[in-house]
Amino acid sequence: MPKCPRCQKEVYFAEKVTSLGKDWHRPCLKCEKCNKTLTSGGHAEHDGKPYCNQPCYAALFGPKGFGRGGTESHTFK
Image (cartoon, rainbow, N blue to C red):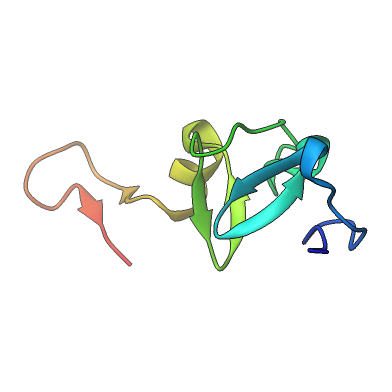
């Protein structure tokens, strides 16, 4: 029986949501930053952890802006 990556309890078929190649309990699949409940496939991933696409993932891992536009207005990590 697979274990939920967040709570480490067994995930039964009736309560399972598959995302990031793992089986989760539906209430356990939450954004790491804001704790918003996510849908399977409706989110982004970083280091194996789920994040909502907007605004959390974009704010944490997206391009960082500076200046007032132009060719050097974004930095990429």
